[in-house]
Structures are given as structure tokens and as C-alpha cells.
Length: 199
Image (tube, rainbow, N blue to C red):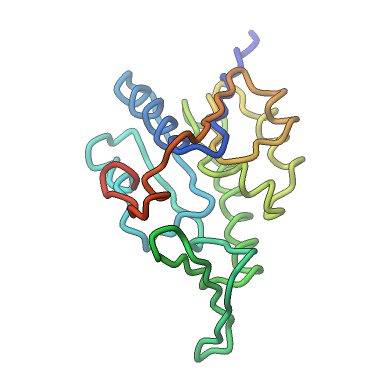
């Protein structure tokens, strides 16, 4: 008997709503009784992110934040902390600042750990959300070939991939691709992210 492979959804683009859309699909799946797991490539377990509490409401929806925080490559300034590590900063609209406290090796190590976690889960759960995995590929933190292998090995698991800049090969492999396009964003007026709406 052949197993019908799960579907592959991709939410990409420069507009807001990629992770939010994936969470909506995940909640719908959890409400239908499916087991859902979200693996996050950049979000740190130290962050106060609302989706980390999904398991409190849905025991069949688990979230694994595997990242070490923001990764900044085009930073405005870098300062050294007490341990001799460079802390990078970049300005955002409204006078805010994004801080990258992790080194490049830490980002790569975290991304590879997220990939290992996803490989453990694929074929074992009904839906696997790979949050910001497209960014991890375009940032060079994981190889495109590793993501293609994961998609090929999905068996019955439905995959939902998020993040900007989905690679054309991933777009080709996907069953559904939605590109979020920014028309307006509160950040542009200096409004910071709102808990419950943005995180």
C-alpha cells in the first residue's frame, strides 16, 4: 500500500503574516485532532512569544524554539561584551534597535539543531511547521539540499514552511505557495510589535 504524501505549504514574501498564517493552519489542524509541531529556526526559547503557550490549550500542538535570536548581517555597530564577543546592533523604524548577541557559529549550530529536530519529527507527526526555514536557507545556515531531502522524506506529514525568500526549488516542490506582500506596516510609522498581534 502506498502512503499518500503530505502536502507542502509555503508562506513567503516580504509582508507580515507568514508565521501567523502557518499558526492558523496549525491551530485548524490541531482542532481537527491532528498532531502538530512547530520548529522555529530563529526564535529563542528566552523570548516571550505567545505561540510558546499553544500546548497549554492544545496538547497536540507543540512548539520547539531552537534559535538564538536575531541574526544581523548588515549591522550599524558592533560592541564587545565582557566575554570578548561582538554584539551587533541595527536600527529599526521608530528609533528602536535590534540586537544580535550570538556569533555566526552559534547561529549555524542552532540552525543545524533545528534541522535535526525536524528530521526526527517528519513522518511521525501529522503536520510539521518549519518556521523561518526559508530564511535559514537564504542566510546559509542550512543547505538547500538538506531542506529538499526533508521535503522528499515527509511521508504522510504535511509541511508548512515560512520565511522570506523561498528558494525557487522549494517553490517548485510545494503544493501551495502564498507570497505576502507589504503594502503598509505599522513599523514604518515607528509602531513597535504588539503582543497578541505580532508575537
